[in-house]
Image (cartoon, rainbow, N blue to C red; front, side, top):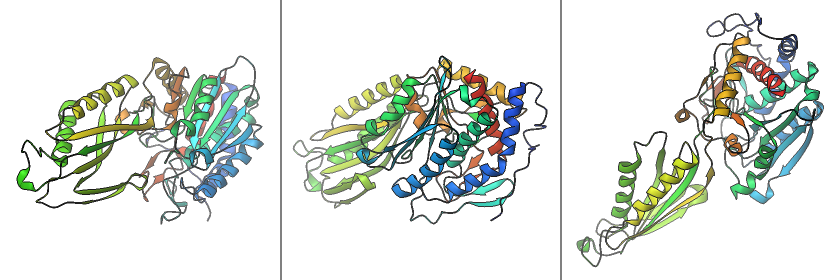
Length: 432
């Protein structure tokens, strides 16, 4: 299929992108080099989207990695593959470029997997018109991966990549993290420890006019409740008590009543099972429950997640939830277990400063201002694992998109070269 080339002017939000009065001579060369590789970028985008790389399709993830590894090798980066067998996933691709000593080290983060496994009907890259392409992972986040590659290409062509210290980390299990999570993200954390700045190319809210300087945490939880089974005529008696379902209901409602108004905190209950005989298969998010209307429920299981803006907010909320669980209704017992999860990326002063720099780059390119995404509009992402290790972090350097994680996922190809220009100039300024 012949790919349509995106227009170089987007008058609906960009104006005249050819007037780069605020750019240096080197930066103008970088921008020109992005344009030179525009067709190549589109072809790469199509190639990797057409490779199924659902998280559990290990061979597909590795095939995408091979494509990107070849590109990074050609750019002069030293690449290595991290085998994911210890954490039950395909693995990760890491590339490093060492430039001049004393310059800042910049960590670029992407992921190669998608939510679309081989069984999905959504498998093919299609260009619908000059402003819309559709395909599995076209935005989340193979478009961002292509931006990384093409930005580095533009920097190399301009003769400035040789002096820069860059680490590229392309994760193979962002959509369905391996276990244990501490092992699955060990190498990302180690890369963050050596970096000064982290940039993520994951989607935020789908807008071209935004970037992400704060992401909430994401941690699973499971509530297990026990009651005394009995004929329903004996419920609420001293001997039988309230039963498991009433206790689960009390706990969930008290969670809501106590914490629902906490800013930027959410705690969703996604599944509930209750009755006389409950079977739960957590790996598949499945379960069955048998119960009769005239029998007091013996068991209840509830699973959900909690998202917070900062480690302090998360800790406080978890402590509050545990205190609520501890106040049992008569003749019931309950335990609340929190799993491993993604940490929050708090909006630090360094992150705000990085956004200011990115905004200045965008204005100098005549691409309009960039504002921060509302954390409630963006999910968890791998950049959060850099929190506490880097001086500044920013995510959401991506194509304009819509419909992520659905068979209606689309992206605007006109924003691919424009975002690449932003990213390349930003990298150049940070690298200086």
